[in-house]
Image 1 (cartoon, helix red, strand yellow):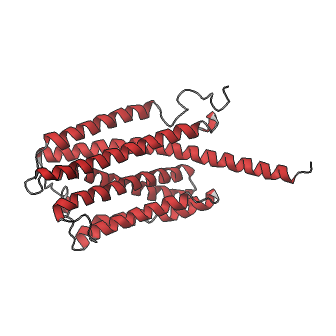
Image 2: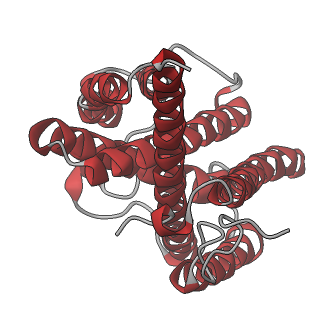
Image 3: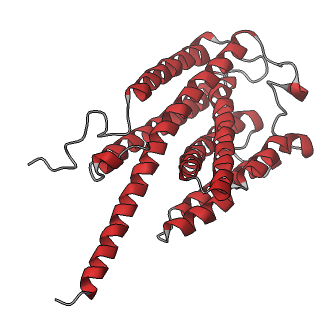
Length: 251
Length: 45
């Protein structure tokens, strides 16, 4: 039997659309190109050897984790200022994606650190501040998902969201402000001039494009999913209110 | 240096595997929840 909810217009039975399918194909092509250049065509580094290939996925992941945090802070500020539900959903979707990217950055950084520094982890300023950023993002998501009133949890999570960009600034500047084991910026040393070139620079560039396409694709899908989750929550709340009212009516 | 390929492969598997798993989870959850929401409320408009 087909219910009313099953009889959806074509394309509305998922979070996908023609645009996201095109974006998804571009992202897959980008990732394939990244694998080709990052693992096959680019040469090993003179000092780091083969482990430099980890940086072709680690650095773009870090950049888009920061962009996700930036979007969350902007979205949170717009929600608190204008009460914009659209911006609140952008903040929530970005925060979850930034959490995934930050976790990837930490793990790939640890894997890069083992052959480079001899240890997986040190309580270095860059590593510690990145771990703090991950905890802050997890805190945002935990508060956003609390079984509480929708307005209360969105407002409280938005306040946490405001703290993300200041934390990203600390992460980004940690290698300048403190003596750290982590290397200083390679791509833009003091804002100008790249310390890498040729196929290695090109591979990193492909990494930014490919991971950027994945980020954009995920953001659209996660935004639509967050919207659906809110609709489902509202429907559940409406049903609970109706049930409570019917209990109060004389039979 | 050939031994370091293990670290390279591990890092790339984590990136591709992590993003792939998260993407599939997002898509499947979207399909599942879509069925529970009325069609006119399924997209921001």
